[in-house]
Every structure is written in structure tokens, then in C-alpha cells.
Length: 314
Ligand SMILES: NC(=O)c1ccc[n+]([C@@H]2O[C@H](COP(=O)([O-])OP(=O)(O)OC[C@H]3O[C@@H](n4cnc5c(N)ncnc54)[C@H](O)[C@@H]3O)[C@@H](O)[C@H]2O)c1
Image 1 (spheres, protein in one colour):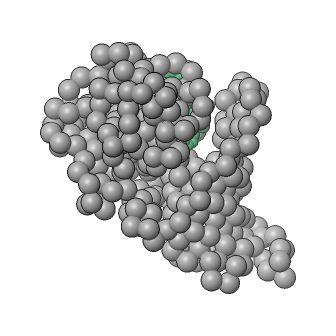
Image 2 (cartoon, protein in one colour):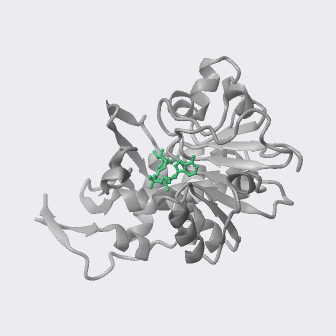
Image 3 (cartoon, helix red, strand yellow):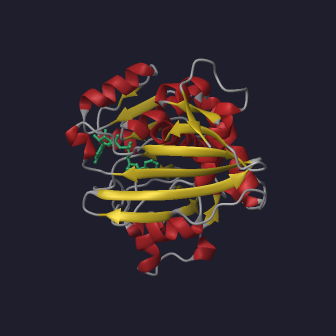
């Protein structure tokens, strides 16, 4: 019988810092770009309007992973998280299950890491101000990650209490208006994607925006024409063009695959990033299983922390 450790949300957060998560996610993007890590397509199982489930597999670094996770936008109104589920981590050589982890915490760490990694990689070299719009579970992770990398964070959420609690946690500041937050040099948006935050003509020269909220059909944080005005990068063309911000732009015929860069290719040094400090860049994230794999591996990299509960399996 194999005793498998179970990482609750706090165990994940205590084991992997936001700064460590950025490095793990960076390495995963590069390994995937080089073909060293595999990621079969994410499978959506939908139960709209309630929400959807995603089955997300990946293999790399000597491990295999499956994340079973949901996105139920109406859940917070009932005191439940938007994103929840479980991650299974296995040994890729023996097939043995190595850990079960809270999917919400793994997701938040890797989402915050990808948002800030993209902003740091694609943002202007003279960028000074950084903001996060949407201070829920995954927005808070982006706020913590900006702070961990030494940036002062401007926070905006339509829920003022949530914005001030998040800002206070990192010694950041609540923006005086949504316009101030959306006008920062580096903007991360992590809202449910019900409202277009960037209408036509709203971005100014030199800005970067990491668009994290629209990770499924029917969601958008930016108008199609505004997205088309930016130099676009994404995490994965297949996922982003089917379920991300890119989906509507591709369907409308205003954006095609050759126009869109890949974050992994830029990080690996195989493709250019931003061309000039005046360019507007965007990063369309739908969230990749390789990011989850990177965080799950980091959770056990230094040995399983003592005191975790275990289950008998296998
Ligand atoms: N790209 C990815 O990898 C990835 C990963 C996880 C979650 N997501 C997506 O991100 C979104 C947010 O997820 P979450 O778990 O953080 O949700 P959440 O419910 O915990 O937080 C959402 C926050 O956005 C705020 N908000 C809503 N509309 C707003 C608006 N117009 N302006 C400012 N604030 C607004 C809410 O008050 C709330 O605090 C969801 O759509 C989710 O599917 C994407």
C-alpha cells in the first residue's frame, strides 16, 4: 500500500513561495517550448450556465500530472470559490502516485506567476507602475507575486473591501479609480470576464496587459479591436484561440496565428518579445497544465513536508 501525501491549500502556499513559483513556471514554459515537456489538450466538460470542468494532463521533469478543476463564476455569491478541484502528481518512471494537491492553491500560484512573468518579460524596459484589477483568489496571487519581485502594486476590485485587504497584505495601494489601475505601465486583469475593461482606444503607448480572466468561451476583458491594436502573445495558441481573448478576435478574422507570439518562445530566446518601449503588448492566458506541473513538482522537490496527512492508495 502506498501512502500518498495530501497538500491542502495552506500546505501548497507554505511550500512554494511566489518567487519560487515564477522560476518554476518560467522553466516549464521553456521546457514545453523545446518539446521536452508534453501537454495534451485540455478537455472542457461544460455545465453552463453553472460553470465548467477542465481535465488537464501534462508530463515532464520525471513526473506526470492531471488537474481536475472547475470554473464556476457564480460560486462566490454562495460562499464557494470560483476555482476548485484536485491535482494528482505521479512519478513518470514508476507510475506511482506521489501527491494529491489542492487545485485552487496550485492554480493561483501558477496563474499569479504567469501573469507577472509575462509582464516582466513583455513589459517596457522603462515600466514603473504595476497594477492588478480583480483581487479575488487568482488576482491576490498576482498581487503577491508582483510584491515578491519587489514591485509596488496598485490594486483595484469592484469590491472595495477586497481591494483594500489585498493591498494591505503587500503594502500596496488601492487605486483611486479603475482608470488609474488600467493606466499602469504593467496591468494584470483577473476578473470573471463579464465586463470589457479595455474598450477601443483605451490602451496607451508602452503599456503591457496580462489578460488572465478570460479563460473560457464567452468571457472577455478587452474589446476585439483593442486586442488587435496590441502586439499579442499567448501561453498556447490552441487553447487561447479556442477559449481565451483570442477566440473572438480569430473568429472575427482580425487576428491570425502568425501575428501572435508565444511566451515560451520568447523566454527560450527563440522569438522576439516587445519591439520598442512604445509598443503596446498583451498576454492572453488560458492557463496551462505545464504550469500546474511546475508548481506540483516544486511542492515535493525538497522532500514532502512533515506532518501532512496521507491516504492509502495503490
Ligand atoms: N488564465 C488563467 O490561467 C486563469 C487561472 C485561474 C482563473 N482564471 C479566471 O480568472 C477569473 C477570476 O478567477 P478568480 O478565481 O480569481 O475569481 P474570484 O471570484 O475569486 O475573483 C474575481 C474578482 O474580480 C472582481 N471583479 C469582478 N468584476 C470586476 C470588474 N469589472 N472590475 C474589477 N473587479 C471585478 C470580483 O469582485 C472578485 O474579487 C475567472 O474567470 C477564472 O476562470 C484564469
